Image 1: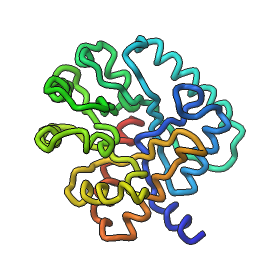
Image 2: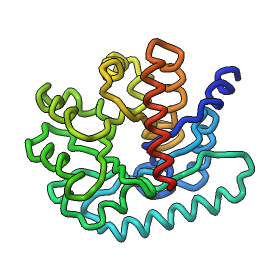
Image 3: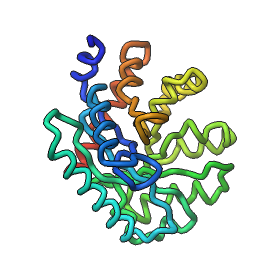
Length: 246
C-alpha cells in the first residue's frame, strides 16, 4: 500500500498502450480496457496515449473511423465508472513502410493535437532507406517521430546503424517491461545510463500476458540510481501528453 501511495503522487504518462477495445491485438473488450485503466491508475499513471496499431494496408480514414467508434465505446463504459482513471488521448503505433513519408493523412495519426508520431520500425536488419525515410519525416510531414520500443530492435542492427538513428532528431521510447524483466534489464540500464531513452511506455495489450506495468518500472527507476534519468523521462512524457491534449 505504501508503494501504491508513493507512486500515485508522481503522475506518470504512458505514451504507448493498446487500451482501445477491439482495435488490434490489444484490449478485447471495454471491460478489459477499464481494468487496464484502473491498474494503470493504481500504479500512478494519470494519462495514457491510446496507440493502436496502424498498418498501411488499411486506409487512414478507415482506421480513424474504427478508432473513433472504439473510443466512444470506451467512453460509454467509463460513464459508469466512479473512481478516477487516467485521461486518454488518441494516437497510433504506425508501422513503417516505404511510402510513409508520402501519406497525406499522417499527421492525423499523431498523438492528439501534437506532432508526435509513435513509429514502429521493421523487426529485421534495416536498409539504409529506412533511416533516410525516418530522417525525412519531420521535413516532409512536419511530424516528430518517437521510435517505439527501441530495445526490441537493438540486437538486430549493427552499432553504426543504431548510432545513425540516435543522431537523428527523433525521440526514443522504451517499454517498462525491458527494465522489469531480468533478461533485458542489463540492456535497459545501458540505454538509460547512456541517455538513449527519452520516453517510456507500458505497451500494455491485456490483463494477462501484457498488463500495464509502466508505474512499476518508473517506481523502481526512481528508487534506484537512475532517479535523475527517470525525472527527465517524466518531464518529457508530460510535455508530450500536454501537447496532445492541446
